[in-house]
Length: 263
Length: 223
Image (cartoon, rainbow over all chains, first blue to last red; front, side):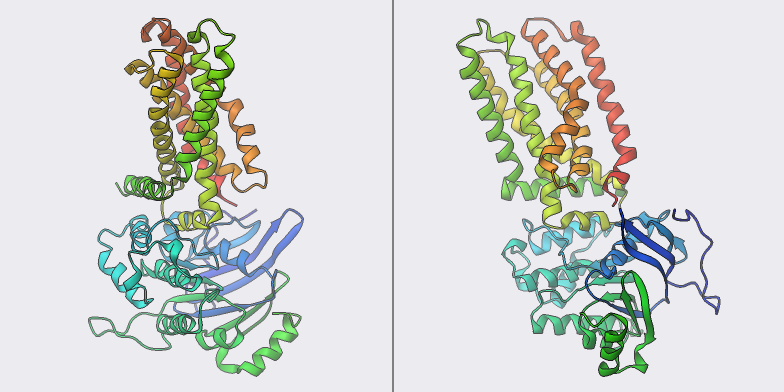
């Protein structure tokens, strides 16, 4: 069973990690998706998870979103146990998955207004306009989502995830269905949010780095937006390393070695 | 305050989507209408006094049509992947329950509002009275309160269209029974006071299941 209220996990330097997993397991009946995963993600760190289909990547993201309850182990976000503080933690999460999590019978603007209300934003109009501008959908804001292409839907999903300016971004194959131009836009956005392309805010201060976990099959693209790489295979972390020590060829070789070569 | 703002946002979203697609309302209303017409043909030939069968026909039509609507309510969310988006929001799960439940209740009441004059005309019974409307309101609330939970429960299963009625019908028997008894008594010229036992039963049912749903919905929607 999951520990209901474990003591806050600390790093060796005494820091509270933004995300900490200890012995995380998840089983669906007799099928085990995650087998004792231990992972620590520091505030402002960008982590990319690679792994073959069925490795447990999406299950891990669903658990981090509090959409799925772990079978065992501890999940802490910002030092708080996810199971006991799920409602409070959700407002710090922005999630993009391969499913758009949008309403196709509402317009782009109505979707963002709806989610803005759920996230407790009192006057979200300015932020909605800013996000629609950033993902290039301002001119289509009054159009129903059902009339959007797959790429446009995914761009709107990105705007929805970033609308409330979350501290943590969980991205499960966010580039699914994106055309090269939109994929480039997403890449640029992630680089900004992870601090790789330093931004300044209206007060001239450096914009803060978000904690980002990205699940993707694109090795090169993942490598270019992350500080650290994790390879997950058969529900276990089989490799963990810093991206600065890697180039795409090395990563490909490591992937083939640790994930069985299937992408 | 933000709790009820979230509830209201979900109701408004459902109403806005429904006004555009008419997915839930059209399926409910057409089904209820066809049921009532078929019952009319079937009973007109053999039943001497239509007042005897009208309450049953009305509540059976509402129950079946309502089940159809409840099923659609979560199936639409699940199939389009938007349910996860809703569950990711930092709102209490019970606020999601109340938002969906009030939406379902509203769609059912609109359907009943259109069904009632039709049943009045087809069966020549005086159903357009406030006492009947009150009974329908209380019964429909109970039905939607329980149905919304079971609909959320069934939506993740493979046989969800079949599972919902299997789960729901045994539990809503008290509402159905009280609704039929009270509608019948009112058609026979009795007052609400004379059916106060049934009225109490339906009120206790409504309150009881609202509390149970409030407490359990979070577990129901969790994987």
